Image 1: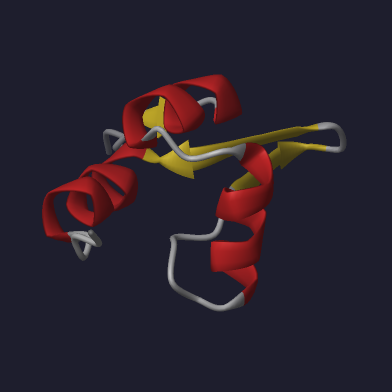
Image 2: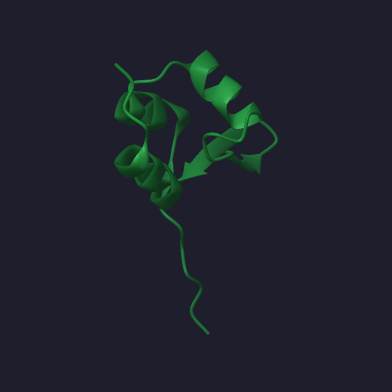
Length: 63
């Protein structure tokens, strides 16, 4: 039975792709306005790439 591997983004990739800062991402995660990261190990987190890409495509535009 094959295991499906998720594509993951590192924090650096998330900050670059969204152009949002670390503190803004953390604030939005707490408010459930941005996907929560996945804990990979004790000191490492990553985001599901599909969830982040979906956010980027559907994020509200502010002026």
